[in-house]
Length: 289
View 1 (tube, rainbow, N blue to C red):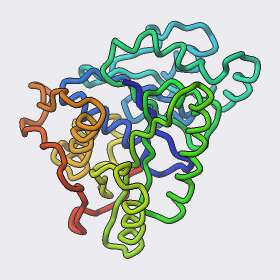
View 2: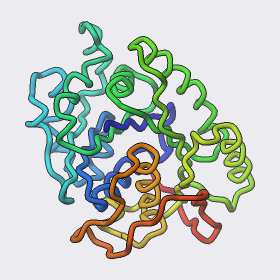
View 3: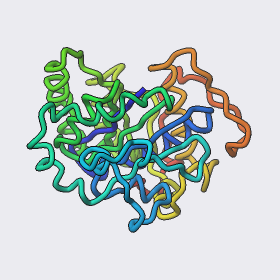
View 4: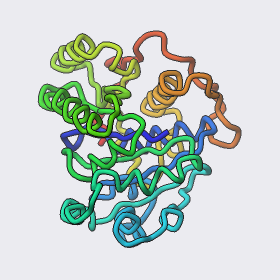
């Protein structure tokens, strides 16, 4: 299954969610590929790739005839692979201009290999650019991460509407997998108010799991590791374990939710959420990136 993480804004916890969810799914025995589509290469750096070692990247696969298999690289976690991004993606809209079926190029390179992994997670840049349209067309579904801040979730409806129009062109229904509340800190009245508004507005489209602000999550990118390698007992790690289980119950019912031996913590997987996992004020410390 291909899942795109999209947002019209940066700094909403999108890359943190992709990398951390990948780590959680791996711990449940799933094979995961992270495809970094952002020219900043934040997901690539967060998974331990040095900036000078990003080639070959997804840009090379799309425009320089590099086979996908040659761009896939293992990470420090067994069953977690990565295709890096690079600064070449900055001008990708110009690259797409001369192509026919320009919104289908990513699907063209990913779909023939989809059986190799249980999950392919696409970390998209902010705004709905050409590469984001490609991600939406290639994906089976998409997730919108958003903090409970007025300015952060103001554009969610616009993103959903533009995604629906794009997919309609290809004869597909809207594929919203869910809206994910990130960087939640209920010590502020604004967060409590906006989270309640989101729950009222989006209902079942809002994931029950909420990701709290957590200093351990914020520290993991510079370590080049997932939260499950650096701080597996952190509040943020628990939240992404819950998200992985909820995602499996939503999108792939019947899949195993039991941790695999050798993947770190020996604690059992949490049960499927029956009510929202919401951080208490005691859970909050500092924002995740």
